Amino acid sequence: MSEPPFRPREKILEKQKVYQSIPKHTYLKGPYDKITSVAIPIALAATSLYMIGRGIYNMSHGIGKKE
Image (cartoon, rainbow, N blue to C red; front, side, top):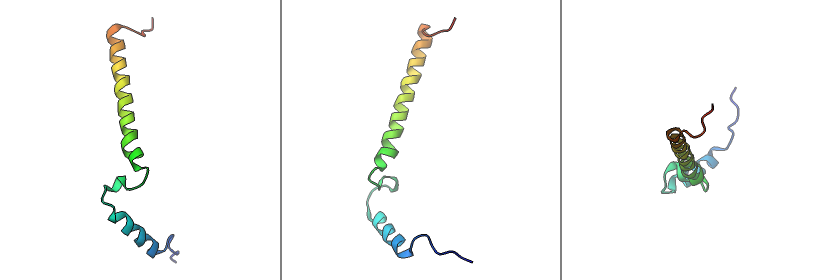
């Protein structure tokens, strides 16, 4: 017993042709893909570097120690 396909094969092939004709990387083809694959990782990296730097500064100056 096989179930019918979720989408018709013609629609899938049509979408494939559209996406394969775009001359960008695969992960940057959608309209919001630059936000998810470029901006969010850069923001996470910048935040983590800031927090690491602040922690090193606080440790070297003895700020924030509990008694």
